[in-house]
Amino acid sequence: MPTENHFAIALERAFVELVAGRVKGRGWKKGEFAAMVWPNDTPKAAAARWTAMRSKASNTGKPQGVQISDAQRMAEVLGEDLSYLMAVAKEQARAQQKQ
Image (spheres, rainbow, N blue to C red):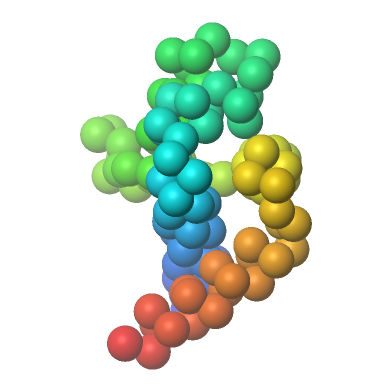
């Protein structure tokens, strides 16, 4: 079971890195992307959510997890299919585990 949990976390991290790379590739600022993903939040709150997913929290040492609903909104903002992004992230996570 620990190996499965480790892969699930690796998959989630690979997804976040993939999305962050696509955001950067489009020339969007982090806060700009966050505001598009969470339009009902204040820009500051949206940016804080995206930052929490990308970096480690000071109290836990772990990044915030990504809910499926958030992942779907990220994919929609990017104009991509969530299942495609997950497949790419899964391959990246597998490759990282083989290293």
